[in-house]
Image (cartoon, rainbow, N blue to C red; front, side):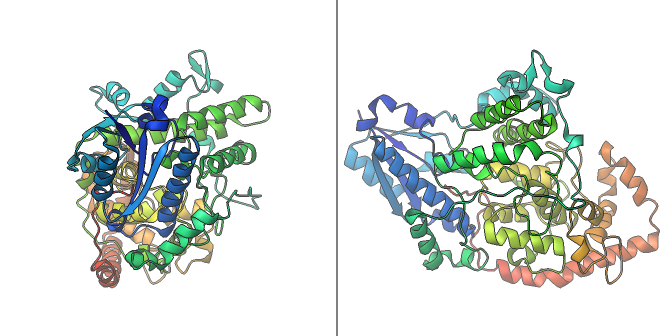
Amino acid sequence: MTIGVWVLGDQLWAEQAALQSCFDQQKSTPVIFIESLDHVQERPYHLQKLVLVWSAMRHFAEALRQAGWLVAYEQADDFLTPLKAWIEAHQITELRVMRPNDRPFARLIQSLPLPCTVTLVSNNHFIWSEADFREWAGDRKRLVMEDFYREGRRRCNILMAGKQPFGGRWNFDQDNRKPPKGKLTLPEALWFAPDAITQDVIAWVKQDDRFKASQQYWQSEPFQWAVTRDQALQVLHFFLTMRLSDFGPYQDAMVTGEITMWHAMLSPYLNLGLLHPLEVVEAAEQAYLDHQDTWSLSSVEGFIRQVLGWREYMHGVYNFMSDDYPDRNWFNHTQPLPNLYWTGETSMNCLHQILTQVKETGYAHHIQRLMVLNNFALIAGISPQAIEIWFHAAFVDAYDWVMQTNVIGMGQFADGGVLASKPYAASANYINKMSDYCGKCTYNPKARTGEKACPFNFFYWDFLDRHRAKLTSQGRMSFILQNLGKIAPEELQAIREEAIAWHSNNVQDDRQAQAGMNIDKKQTLK
């Protein structure tokens, strides 16, 4: 009996479950990595996502070779052809794969006609197992993230004084919402120059005609992401020493030309498996304990809530939901995605700045994603599935489990309130408060109608008006709906006309951009 291990592209950790199940026989256990060229053409992935995943895979494969594993690394059109040849060459009777994070890929593996037994080993890349989350969810009427987060703190004994949270409060979110007023002294970022392996991948994705769709939207250089565990640990250490102490107050702020602000920049490495969430959380807690006389608890708690709370919660909900979750559309939004998301060409300065940043780096922080990119799609009535496809293609840290919940659930409220207690819809007022984008914009952030009216404004009030009946059932919307009632009927009509005109002027370009794209929203990069 010969056991072989297939390592997927987001499972790059020496202690991942499938490898660990064979650790005692590592010198005689065949291991395979596969780059499937057909698979990565199912949507126009950001070139830096392709470079990041493939370079990290190649580096990890070499690390396993150095550790004594029998590693094969294959590039092919599909997964099946090299798998079958490798299985036959090594006379493998059982193929072990750590259960994929993404449900569509798990189904793909189970559908492959392989000449051996396939065992999906329980995934250990998260703090909460799928079974643990289901037990916690039980028969709860609502899966409230705050409840889940508090239970995670208790289970892991993080920022706890006995049974009570440090500081007497579980959540310091109210302390972490400062707008970027005045002159801010921003911390440096830690980036890496591409080594020979990464340079080879960059050259390939830049020149290969199979990536034409991606080449017209995204830049492959400058590529500065970490591609090894050692580099990812350096980013973690850099964040803990240079950024964490001041992370909280301005974590929601947006500043022109400032890509990273105080953010950790760890999500790509967590999602690849180069870092484990528990080691990140414990390291942040220890950093606070070492400096608690001078550091603000609100910054550390805010960061830990993102990893131990939000990230684990999103993964748990993703696996807990039924198979129809990706297709939900509570508002019945059907507008096509505007071409500006792909090109960044728009007079709305906030969108232009963020989309240009995404084009160059494959990254935007959580408020840029939620309150600008997602917000605009929501209030403009864009199809939730269309914007989710774009998010999945555009970001280096994007995976099915990440984007289904964050976009379909949180960003678009398409699940009707499973994840969020209200839609995250906002006018230009929010963006003007939390950024410096509006000061250099063509549009007036205070105008709802007229030539200089910001589209965020007329779309916001049109959104509230269109869905007034549904939104009355959302308790947290009552105050803003009262304000909607104060708008004169003739102004509401002008707002509707502005929204209709905007879509009319943008839909043609979008249809041309989407023509011929082979995009399957249920597939994901491995």
